[in-house]
Length: 427
Image 1 (cartoon, helix red, strand yellow):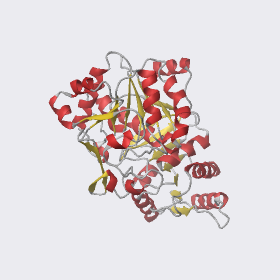
Image 2: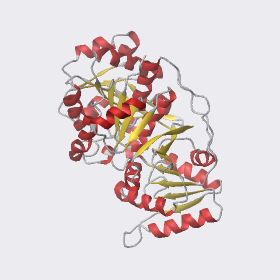
Image 3: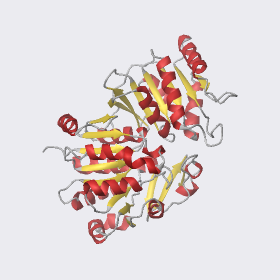
Image 4: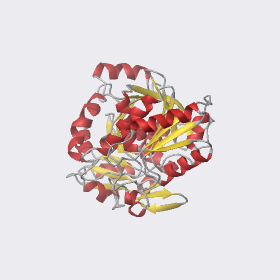
């Protein structure tokens, strides 16, 4: 049977590569095109790929600017008649009425794909992100916290999460009514009936505590589509559930092919404690670390950081990390991601002989890749810890786009070695 086409817009670049990874695990081939394709190009891509994604930067945009930014992509993705169009959000659901708001996506998605309730599924159990009775939870280390008490997200420098009830959180970003479908309906098979009974709602938050719940949510989506493309908002957990349901198989967790070791440049605009631990682990294994902080005049010393990175590679360092923070931001609120992304792109170009690059930080990654002028990416291979090596279709450069809270502590050294860490079991 021909596989149905799946499409998505990613509100940041790291999340977009996560969607590719989830589908890749189920044998579905995907591509990221960095500019919305015209209708003919979208149809041509659909002849080769199972999944077409357009990565964006909506999560870091003022909400008033999101509509014009996402409309071309959501319109283009309708052309080949997809089974589902996903507006990909982070599994921590970080957004606000002022920045990264979901209201424009809800309005445009309903306009283009039908005025039906939009499923919203943020949970991603394999990352420690859960939704129960609409309240969202996120793991930090060994502990799981309600989202408004999670150490990182409750203090996020741009979109601090002060509300764990996703119905309330989303309702503050739209004039549409928001309700939910809880875990009981997913488990007892009444989710479809619940969805249809809430036809007057603008959006429905879906619970999920396990991967079985993700599959159940996907089954519900299949039944309420009524043969038409459906628009949904969700994390990589939604992608996992859709892939599992449509392919009817378990994810492929066999060790991926090992790429040859290669010098690796990491540029990090992340303020997360996990990224800080990854930087320290790399430093303990012979990597050079280069802080990138504004000088007395407020300028970023890009040339000096580039020179230090090149010197470290010339001296035989296996990798170099250029970073704006080690955990907490070095200045109030951290550096603007647009400014950081432009600086990182300059540093990557200055280290042009280095073909394997990691960009850490969800907001930073999008601005960095755009500044580099990358046109399209596909999957070179997963590397464990929900990270994936992508490959630029134009020049073969290998890129890992990593959200702040993604990956294992040894991720950077694993990328450099081209190997794999053991991913958490997915069932």
